[in-house]
Image (cartoon, rainbow, N blue to C red; front, side, top):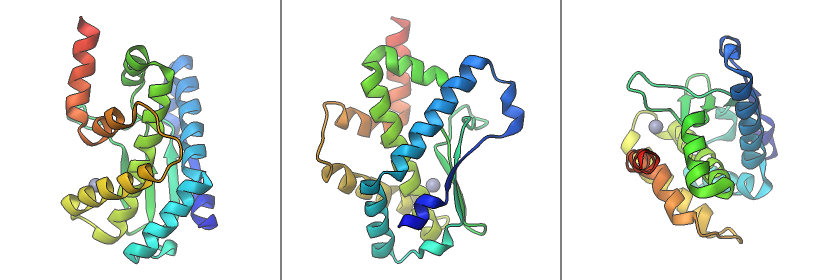
Amino acid sequence: MQSLSNKMKITVHPEKLESSQKQVVFYMKYASFVLRTLRRPSFQKFLSWMLRKENIEEHMVRDVQIRVFPFQRKNGNGLAGHCNTNRGRIQIYPKALKFCQNLMQEGGKDKFISYAGSRARAALIHELLHMKYANDEEKVRELTREYFAVFAQNRPVQNSHVSSIYNMIFKPEATESALKTSQEK
Ligand SMILES: [Zn+2]
């Protein structure tokens, strides 16, 4: 899976460069962390196994863009990833700065780092599965949870944040309201 790793690159949308200096620095660091995380050999090996198991041909994926700035949906929810199956293009987005700051205050830097890494891995697993299951969102979500759990279980290092991070990724609405409440106290 050497080649999937080579298709990954950090991408900035120029109009977003108007963001404050602080935001730009934060999001650039975030993107390079995500790139390193997704390129790690243990994760690449896992993806290669998953693609084989699902019969998804690796050449269907032309590029994986690690986007520097978050994507805000009209309803205000952030987007973790996007897949254009015709073009073979996957985009991975970061979580918004405000949420990250709240999380760091509540759980410390370690928790934020675990969260950001896990979120990016889950997003890439999810979008790769879209290559095969196209618009079957339910199937993709179900399989994403399964594969994410397989990867997490096989990791040598476990930390105390694992189960709460799992919930943050797969039950994000609950987490966002919990974080908001803890901020308001
Ligand atoms: Zn999806």
